[in-house]
Amino acid sequence: MEGEKNKMKGYKGFNPDWTCRDKQYRVGGTYEEETAEMCTSGMHFCEYPLAVLDYYPPIDSNMKLNKFAVVEADGVSPEKADETKRVCKKLKLQAELNLAGLAKAAVEYIREQTDSDNAKFATGYRSVSTNTGDQSVSTNTGYQSVSTNTGYQSVAKVEGFESIALATGYKSAAAASLGSWIILAEWMENKKGEYHIIDVKSARVDGDRIKPDTLYRLEKGEFVEASDE
Image (cartoon, rainbow, N blue to C red; front, side, top):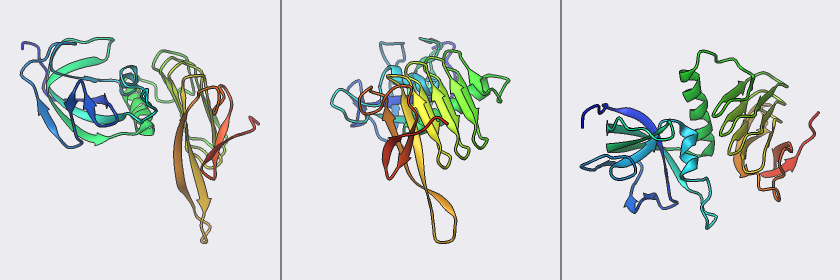
C-alpha cells in the first residue's frame, strides 16, 4: 500500500487471555496479516500509550485485568483514527506493560512531542505533569492525562477523566477524579538503614473503595486516606 511506513513503536491492549478480536497473541510473538485497513483488517495499535484505555480499560466486565504491551509495527497504513489509532500488517509484541508502565510511557511520549519538559501544572487533553522534588505537588486537569511525582512526601493529583496519578516517592500520596486511577509505592527501611520499594499497587477511583479527589497512601499493602497537609 502506498504511503506505508516501515517500523514504528506503539502500544496495544488485549483481553485478560491476550486475545484481541478473536486473535491470540503472546509476548515475544510476531504476527502478520495480508492487508491493513482501518477498522476492517490488519492489526490495530495506538501511538499514544494511554489511548489504549479507550479500547481496553484496565479491568474488563468480569473484573479481570486486561493486558497491555509495547509493540513494534511494520507495514503501517497511512490512515489514522482519533489522532493516535493506527493499523499495520506486521506486529511484534515486545514487552508487557502494567498500568504504571503505560503511565511512564505516556510521560516519555509527551516529552518527545513537546518542547517543555518542566511543566508542573498542565490542563490540556492528554497532557502530562511531572515532578521529582521532595514535598512537591504535581497536578494535572486534562482528560486522559498523567501526573507523576517521585519525591519524598510528595503528591500527585489528576482531575481529568480516565487519567492517572502516580506517586512513587517515600510517604508520597495520590488523588484522582472518579473513573481515573492512582498508582502508589510503599517503602520499607532495612537493617542497614536503606529504604527500598516493597510494593506497588494501582486502584481505580470507583467512589466506594477509593473516593474521588481524596489523597491516598499505600501502607501495609492497603490504600489509606492521607492528610493533604
